[in-house]
Image (cartoon, rainbow over all chains, first blue to last red; front, side, top):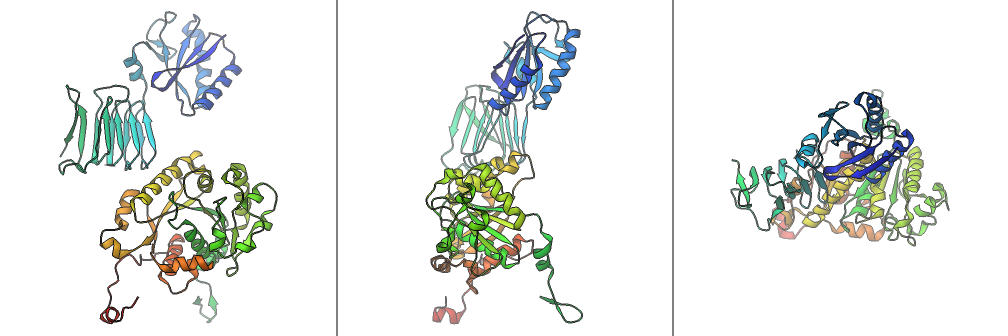
Length: 216
Length: 293
């Protein structure tokens, strides 16, 4: 019997578990996880022993129920030599070595329907959609794309994990800092008339320069 | 007062609401982030204004270590026990609450001058507020400046917030930060309840200086903070005089500051009052000649 938790990239935790585990120990582990990271949500399951899908189905149901109570859920099963096929007990089997696979599995667009005030940081692995004002000194950080359907006066950081294809779209552009895949630009001076408070898209071109293009 | 058919005086609608219908107490925090913008002045006048309307109101000073509210309310010498004594169990609420000298529905809970802000505990503050909720209609919390523990405790249990700001950039920016804290760290935010209702109060507003471009206008401030404006208090020398003599500014009858605070309280209670003192007054010829104020 063994239950081990490992934090991994992209904000999920790997739960290493033996075929017959102790329920109490499991619940305690989950509570400890929530103490450690109250925003924790995604769990990847890794089996340490060989067990048939049919035998494990009942345990999987219990796991799902217990996790749901703690606002956690199993997003996929980690692929290892013990598992055959691409689906295990209704969960996709994913090769963790290949990060892109993992990213596709996590449904994680974050929708923000309140003003992002000064000093607030919005962080997400996936896309971020903001429908309200982003204030001065507020930060919106995404590993993927950022959309702001309002005025933006704060800092926008897209592709924070190095994704060069990430894009930023802003309805009324007046940001003080923009960055895609760690290529950044501090906007110190007043923007030119053709961009200030205009709808823009921001992307990296093939020479890795930041481009701000008006959409009007 | 209104007259009924037989000619006797009856209470007008708003007065009735004030006396009987509010059983659930509301906690209102007066906060700003920046210091010196008029939080304590506003707390004193707002609480007095509510009490004058017939609501049983208590105003609590959360600025532990730098108490000022009792000075502005003119009850400095009557402070024997304070908020920290109550939290520590050294005094009962009834021993610590000071009844206002001019207004019978108004009570003051002063801060300690000797302790520091660490004396405030979440459990302690919660207990005091819950006890007060049984007795009062409104609990007004006067927050200290900054975003440290005192300010945090003052806003934590709030149902509504009055965010006081001056028409200048740094004050507005700090208010933006406080609004962010209100929407993420308050009790309501943490428990997923309905969000804290936010009101904006602009103090020290000088329409002439706004017109000259020295000060931010109401529209500029609204564009940055995007919350409804509850009141605009004009810049006035009366405020300084009021605090030096230990009278809430709302009690200086006939002054524009007093009128502005009374309007503010009326709007808070849901009445529709047009904004005053936000435009430059056109001086008449006689006034210009003889230098009227």
